Amino acid sequence: MPVSIIKETIELDTVTLDSDGNGFIQKRINLEQGFQHVLRQVDVFEDAIPFLRGAAGDEQANYEIIVSPYPQIPTNMFYRENVPVQLNRYPCAGDDSVLFKANVRLRSLLHSEIRQFPSEQIAARNLSLFYTDHLYINIHFMGIENLDYGNIALSFMMVLENKKVNSLTHSIGVLAESHDAMCAQLMSNGHMMTINQLKGNVFPMWRYGGIRPEHTLTPIAANAYFLPINTRDAESMTTTPGIRQAVADARSMSPFDSAFGDKRPDWLKDHLNSGIVSGAVRDQWPPIKHADNGNVRML
Image (cartoon, rainbow, N blue to C red; front, side, top):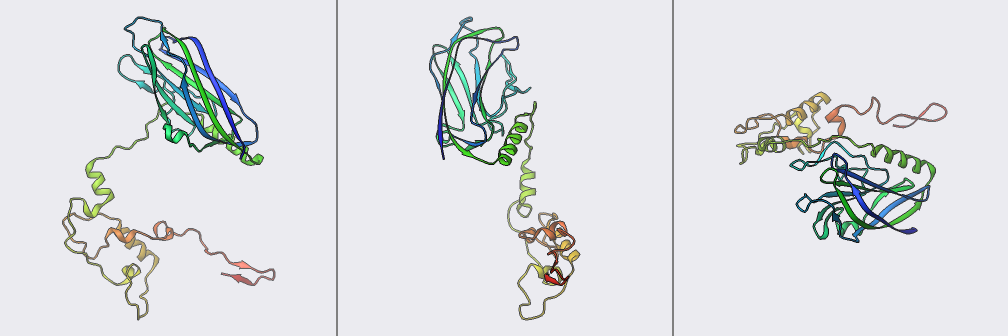
């Protein structure tokens, strides 16, 4: 697979932050059309020590670097909530629109401290792929409003593997990436759990520790579906609703200090096919195949 090495720099004498303490820098890199690009390696290097053109006691700035197929849109989320507040950060590094992200902390009279995602070890063997015919380097400065930061010099190296793909694959890939680039302005996608929920919902049999006093299973009707019994006798018949009721019983909670009785323990619900859990997949399965004369060929 052909490999291309891209080297790029961003050099600015002055970066002036706006009234909200933000400054945005962007650079576009054009690529060949009709290819699937795999971003194999990424490296960022600070060539000079940035200079704060303000009071010596002013808070040093933070800034974000993102490499992405499309321009990054600032969100309404905080980078830092305590004073001085830093707002409008870029999306998280795990967002689908982000190929590489680094958070940088400026230090007085020293090179900046850089934290990156993926890490240096993974970024040296990255496998992020995209289809657009351009890359963007996005930088977001966050600091004290209306202050100037100078002597900004950054170097980038990106190694791409390029593979020619058909127009349909390329068009769908570009469409998906353009949709991913439409970031959410506010994100809240975690689910809060309590200790009791974790113990009770994941492992209800062991919610309070210890084993149940007995495991009583009736080896008749629907329960015979789960147990290797009656191997020499005719299999006892049951109905689909009966099996589904057994599954429903296996999914229900029982008091922690009580025996199962004739109910089914929760492990009976494992390894069931989807038709038993959620109903028939389709009305007639497998479908009947007909020959040209109308005879059934396969059932």
